Image (cartoon, rainbow, N blue to C red):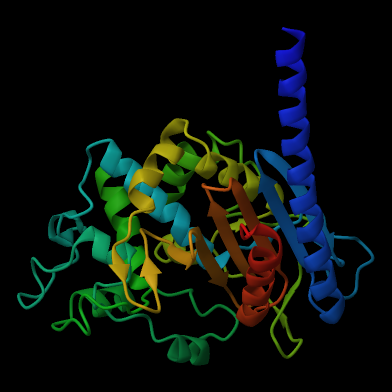
Length: 353
């Protein structure tokens, strides 16, 4: 018995040392990139074999001496779509819908698909950006309201859905936020509740993600965001129409709780990944799962979703095979820097050699 216990201690110690080593590498890589980009503030949450690590670089604003930490709130942008996808998958597991159902019967009565596109768009087409539906004209929205371009009304959604008679490149990847606006409508129809309530009941409350914010984000420990030119940018207001596509605010403390749930084999959130991790679209350049993307490198692969707002950039990524997850939050709208951070961490610290 003493020999068995000794072996168990050795195995656990080795696993812990390996986890520490990967976390140390991640910290070293991100710290080096942070030094090259002194104007960008970064908060990173890393989960390795169930253990959490937090790395933070910078102050909450350029006029503050308060350092960011794992409780500092950022906009997560389109990482919201990963949560919306998980909620749809949970609804499918509960028998409230099927992911290959056509969307026609799930739309509110105010929305009527034209005869030309009835019976063509599946829920899975929405989640993998193959619906062929147009996106919001962000350039026009910015011109009309540069500080809050997503403060849109139902009329703009009516125009995109009710007045649309053609699907552009149906079955091909074509990014569109309207896909996830519709997914939010579907959730509200099958649960008879608003998106905010569903999100809290199905994800935020079970995981005790108490610092993940929707309507009210008037808090002190909140990042000040900037664009690439260094101009200060406001957080986007909560709009229940657009919310399922990208309006959640959160921090690394809460998002690591989500990562641990996604990596686990227990609970409804983990069970939903049997749907969200399937491949729904694949070319040589891109592989889409349900509300997230898949990156492959030889035998290694990870799931991920990025997010960009006027003020922040983000990425959530995880790999069940090697049991790691990462959330990276920036106080700048900078998708290139997000790509550099995740790719450097994966290739130098997380990729199995």
